[in-house]
Length: 304
Image (cartoon, rainbow, N blue to C red):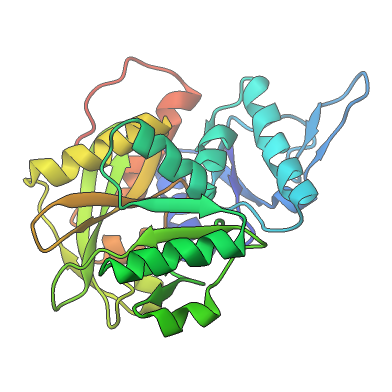
């Protein structure tokens, strides 16, 4: 029986779905925290030590979470993922994909350079310059959103509608990530498209109770068919630019009907999406992941 390391500090619902999908394929698993891993840089023995894998490295590593911490700690956690890949262990998503997407500034930079439509965005380290820029945007009739570089699930986002709001302009450890707010009409909503191996396999419309459309912030999930080719192609193109095995892509459509990519998530949740989707997302993920553990000619992903 093959054995898989599921990297997470909180298995929860997603860990259980992956466990069930792996078991159906005849694979065992162990939940592993990156905080408990270490590099063994002496001759002899395994160069990377993972709890529950002291006698041999896993057949593959499925990344469901990277802990926060100091810069040194986070770099070390990513070092573990990089080292495993260098040793030939499939890591899904790998450390490079996590690095590119956990940092919103780099995500936005790469998408913009590739011509993927995204809202105008500025990243800078001076409060004075950030205030000047924000005032200019507000005077021009635009609203702004500030985001933490390393945040998720809508936490830490702030919206600025008028100059008085700028007294509380929020930074992320001295860095300002400012993005022009995109209005989509009276009912706040955006889209989450789930992409696996370059193909959109499920999508939903997220309708927020406020201007935030994250499920973790109370948004309602509605099913979306995959026949909107512009929506699906945009999500697939974004994932291709960032070179990821799978991703959750957040897309918004303005009142003119134009799509823009807001974020690309390398460790996306899919509980809300699964509630309105007929496909088993965990099964599709595990099928693709295991094809990397035992490489075979890739066929098309079947959306059941």
